[in-house]
Image (cartoon, rainbow, N blue to C red; front, side):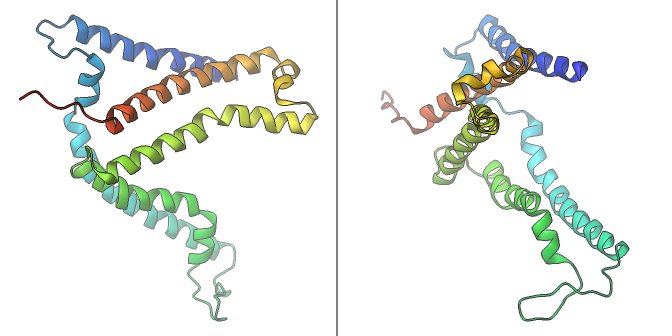
Length: 211
């Protein structure tokens, strides 16, 4: 447990520090014309970023098919071979597709979204398109709910469980838990700030270019 907590603290320091070091290196480069190093970082595109999306699409398709085969084989091992899965019309297919979708629904949604949404966005024109802006808005909202608001939500659930208001929860748990939560929350707030900054640049009216 202590080793995992140490790794969490190390990661919380390493990634923001790495970003700061990259910014400092860009500022010190001779002939750096970009007034804002962040813009250079966000605009930079490594060749792996262009190669990975089309390379990864077959993986998601194969992984989804492999997950279904594993699920079906588990059903056979548990004795469901002669008990076809019922459908709405009363018949059975015996494949276990419905139970697979119920059990692995989120993973299936993730894989399908990666292939049908993220791959086109990463492959074709991205900047200043409606799809790109919509994807950015969904990403911002998802990050806020699942990465930032997760911590007060957990505190609130625990406070309801022990019967104390939210503001008293930090005083009713060990200090190490609060330190761990703060260490995890700090980089989330930092990254959320970067996302908000990028969203503002994308959605803000662009000043007219000089002739």
